[in-house]
Amino acid sequence: MVFICYTRCTTCQKAKKWLEEKGITFEVRDIKGDNPTLEELRQWHAASGLPLKRFFNTSGQQYKALNLKDRLATMSEDEQFALLASDGMLVKRPILVDKDFVRVGFKEEEWASLM
Image (tube, rainbow, N blue to C red):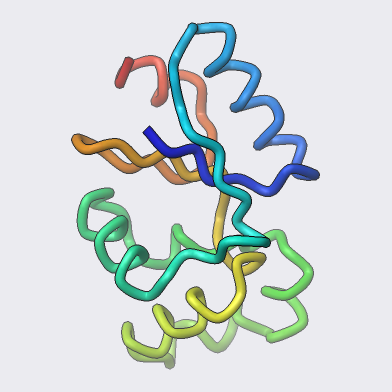
């Protein structure tokens, strides 16, 4: 299992602590230092069953600076994937990736149902 996070993000810290308390083994990957690739994002999106918009960190400074709230609706899926792959800070986190599932964002109830 891979836990993709930004170490300074309080939600990521909370999720990591939750995983540790449950005794779940995982590998940590810093999204800022090791940005998801275009192919990874495509695979995670397909496995998650979520709309692509859910992969964007809508509360982030970069999202707001690029005015993506208004621009995403007019962008193609390929353009959105390319944008996400260009900057890890645009990607919603944490992301929990396992062979059977992908979860974006931390909601304890959702994560508990997987374990």
